Length: 184
Length: 277
Image (cartoon, rainbow over all chains, first blue to last red; front, side, top):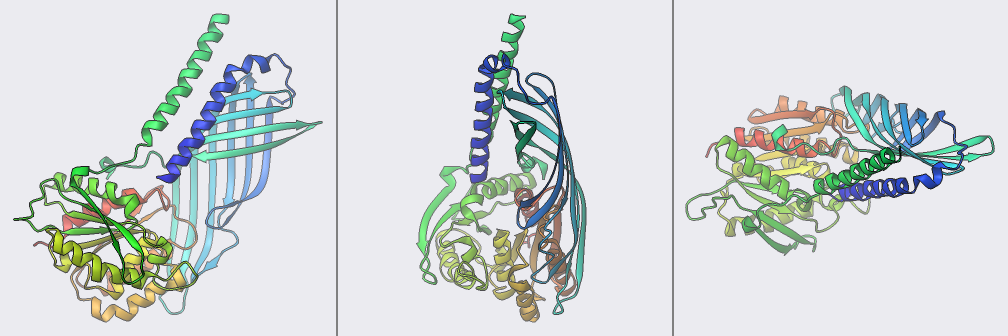
């Protein structure tokens, strides 16, 4: 329940920022922005979540008109890459592929842009683990799962000379709301 | 043109406000009927911690005539209302007698209370916690609430470390509970110590009549959940002759997301397969 409260607070904050900023948008829109209208942002990184995931990602963002953003986010993850044997359990392989598309709005200042996107897509995960301990019988489990993936993405771009730096944050909303009794 | 811009801004503002309202309304904390809920605190003589206990009674609780089964719920502060409401809903749907739900709140850190062996300073209090349940909590409940005192009428429900604790109780104090709802159990803990406990106590436990529900999320891909889960299922399936056993994998859900759906499936399985009185 606490995590839902934090999530609610975060999303409310983001929504309020968007709402308030949009009320002031006429102030910004009169200024010529140096933020590009089409960006392709490949990246390589790590993600810590019960281990360390290695990610290759790409965000394509297109702003056809002021305050409208369309985006595509792709990622390939090698999950839990640094811990392949844990307490007698061997990870044979563990990958995820995510593809999401989103639409949202962008707020501009002269050298920055703040984009809020509602993203939706799918995630394919496949992994195989083996209980590999000489004291017990060897048992392997493998999973191939295709699941929905939707959430809110915030992306900020900061222009510096002819370069831009980007920061983005993704708040997954799946699985939410959680299943109730009627789904049993 | 200006009118259109004003309209567009208005729609955006209303949209944002609606989003906040929807989010706000979705964050209501689930509650169980307060008239049927009793709360008290009890100090464990085994470890000194004080536990908040909540007891959820059936809607038609009739202590003079009926003896009810009891479900002991770990992580009680999070799960009490959900489990109590589901028990009511499922028992109504199946037209069977509801149960008394007893939730155990946090006394010490859950990672201390729910883990059977000490591998760090925040693990290893499981034996004391089990002793508290056996020697203090269950006798207190069975003295004051109209519940059936037979092993077959007691259920334990736990998720994650709580599931590990349930597996620990299954192996080491099998006479206490006759039904085990083990959700995403952390069977990897301490170099698969649960498998050692199970093997060590197998001869005493394997011929007892009991019910086990094992639930997990399909996307629990931390490199430690699925293989021990499947291995534990295979052992129970092949070695325990008098066991009613069900396994469930919640599609598209992970460790936390699968908890409530597995609670629902586990309770359904229990209500449909519990031993007749």
